[in-house]
Length: 359
Image (tube, rainbow, N blue to C red; front, side, top):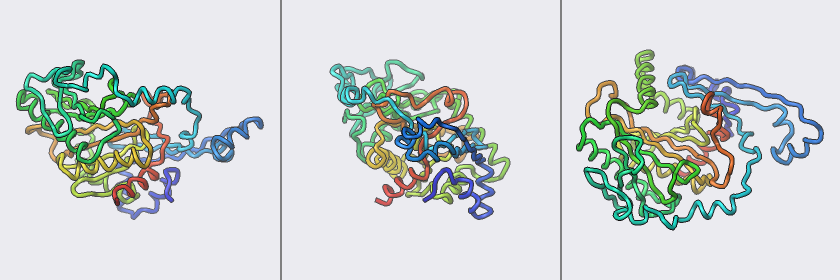
């Protein structure tokens, strides 16, 4: 079975044209780390990591997206490091149960609305965020309070309701054109309230900095190679067995992941194929990969006519944030100031997702 540690060899076996496009987008560096443990440490290494040899001679793979300047360092051995779950037994029930003073349990009485009103979906309703980081910032409050309890119809409704709210905000203020849909599932992923909810923001002036950087990078790629970046991105991932198409939506297990198991879905609109593909990823995370916490972000192209964004797709990115009972953080100084360190193998994630999409 393919593994991220064999990425250089896998790429070298691709057809020449596909290799060329891969090298337009990515660079791969394979690093070898060695160490000399004391004899007293060998039994612990064997028990924890399964092999002394795997620890004393480690293969580390660094993948860099030359277009977007994203970089990820893969060493699946890091997933076997010791973690502190000493409070997991007491923290889990507190994290996963409804707060006694949950303001989202009765949103019409306990949450404010936007100046242009609320948007009601079948399984959710919007409220104006009381602590905003954008002029127009809503909370999409789920009727089902359990954050990891969702089905296909509910996910489609959450995204659809958020999109309707953005359109309503844009109609109220046409200068507000730049929209993100954000879902932090559980406190491990940044949720301050455990009741299931998402957020939508829409601003004016320009898109958010990372989105603007992506748009500029994509435009530069097109100017340099005369090709569509997103089509090429999908093509090389598909050639590696890390991408597939479902309807009009394209799903990619992304090589320069932000964190564990990052998956990207590209679409033309928030239609059934786009939301179904997102649900299929999230349900695989939860049911097959035992993911307890995740972040989902959806980038919408600008509402209205804005030059320079032609052909820019909807982009959903989903990432596993680890176990809610783990007291250690999954993000440290390396992620802030260096590159992303990823403990999972994208080829293993792709195998699990492929089975889910077949089903």
